[in-house]
Amino acid sequence: MLVDIICALLFLCIPSALITAYIAHMNDRSLWRWMAFGFCVPYMAAVVAMVVTYFDQKRSGELDE
Image (tube, rainbow, N blue to C red; front, top):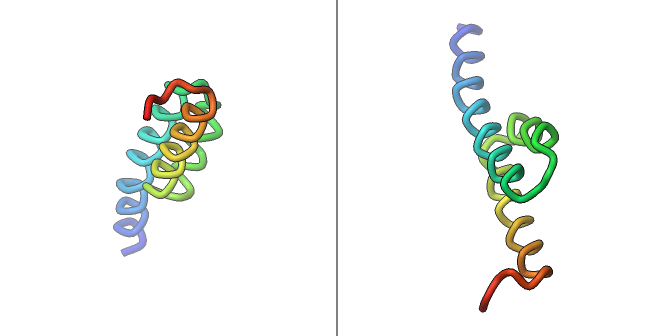
């Protein structure tokens, strides 16, 4: 029972951590810090990384609106 719960959590957390780390790394952010954040807060961290990236690009003028 406990093994099933741990496997389910790892199944959710590891892809989230990798996706979040990829988004952060492509935008010159700390890979390991964002990976840990993505592991601790699955899938919500990817949304946060995208929002942070959007505001960084908007501030630097790279985004055309």
